[in-house]
Image (cartoon, rainbow, N blue to C red):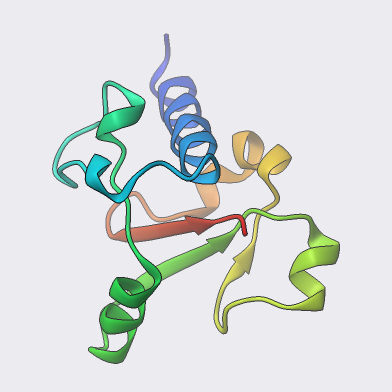
Length: 103
């Protein structure tokens, strides 16, 4: 499988798991590529707020529909609806912190 397809598949897997609401105890290491859904890194809203308040550079991606995004979204979040992630993942930086949210 080519690298772009692997990256795309991993992004979709991460997003699917994130939207399923896994338990916070399933947080994995951010230094490795998750092999299972239990290893997908998770972040709580309070942790994200702390990062942002501390001036950390975090890309926030709203994976809901464009209509939902336009109605309300986290300040600074970009809209990338779930069904577009596979085609648009190259818009995201390769390094750095990226947080997807869907609810």
